Image (cartoon, rainbow, N blue to C red; front, side, top):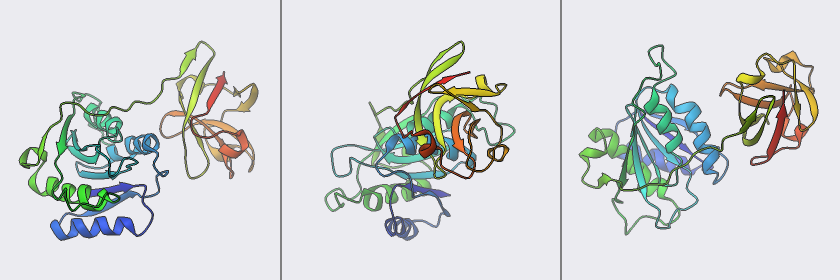
Length: 263
């Protein structure tokens, strides 16, 4: 299987699929093509939340604000998966997750080594590649070749990277009765996902969000339509939401904003 993920609107992903189909008989699955435009951190967050639920596969990820520059293209091997991506850190959080164990299976106990390997890709047709669409001209062909040859080690144009761009998510400042955190992403429903882990609020009736007490509930529908709530999302982090509404608008928050939570 080869998966595709990008921040490309239609019809650009179709060109990537066409390139892969012309070089490989692999099954192709789309992960998402509506990641926030040029937002490497948001894409990295969602990839970490989604790709571990796939069986071992080759993943082609293109969120690439540096397209056409001298940034490298890489293959990251982790937990039986290969991730082909620009060297901007987008593949690193999910690589760490994949290397630590697969949460999607009963046997995935997190006992993996935690190690991953990074390879740099030499462009197959560097002189003719578009400077604005490496998804089609660099990453899609690389994904097909990595998949069909069984990994980057089998390709002459791949060599182990001496260095690569790292990406980590900011840590919250947690104290006994609260945390100063940050908004990591806002999903398509408007739910505000913070970097604060959900464990401390699971037994709370309410949390003060920037000095205003908001009820904590396990489900969105536990509040009346239009009412705000604090919950723990499927990602395990504190989430600020509105039942049948948009949390970002109701709380006046956007990606990167600081948020003070007190429980």
